[in-house]
Amino acid sequence: MTTPTDDVIELTPELADRLGELAADGYIYAVVELAGTTYLSRTAGALVAMDIDGYGQVPATDEGHDVALTMRYDRLVDLANALQEWFADNAFEAGTFAPARESEDILTALLGDKRIPFEGVPTGPGRVNRDWQHVVPLVLIATDYLPFTGREAPTGNVLWLDPSTEVTYLRSLARLGILEFRVHGE
Image (tube, rainbow, N blue to C red; front, side):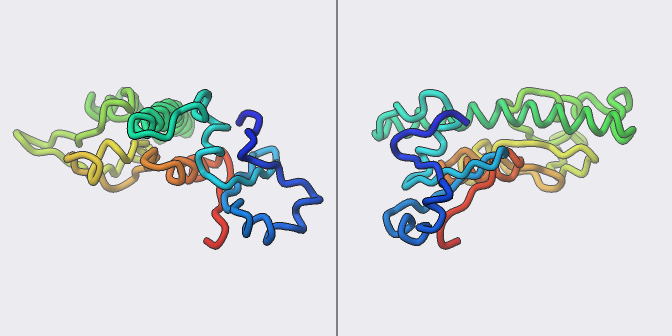
């Protein structure tokens, strides 16, 4: 994460005793980085801006919201591609994944660009299996599926990353272990 903006404060030991007061003042979102630094913010967007270059300059307009969603989507796709490769590499090293024994459809799902949504593994003419039961988890982007599109979402061993809102974006990063994300009162 980058340096905090004016909308984000670093939680110092002096401020730690004033958490209730800070929450009452609107600082309801918190991110804890892997290094242990805690940042508080009145908006989830200010915390997202610490992770995505240029995000803080996106205007709060209808067009700006679309741009912001695209920025969150692109960032999570990049992470999904890297994470999918990491899962596959670890399974290969552990001897639980042998690419030479997998079908082209399975390899495409695992190793293809996550900008191309998984539509299932063909099981016959006009039939697909959307229940992913492979030992390697499938990393997918939630906004590529229902309710955001008309595409049915796969089930099974799937790790979902969700760029639909700033809060779901931060929760996705937390699910990956990149940071901890907290909302006051939850």
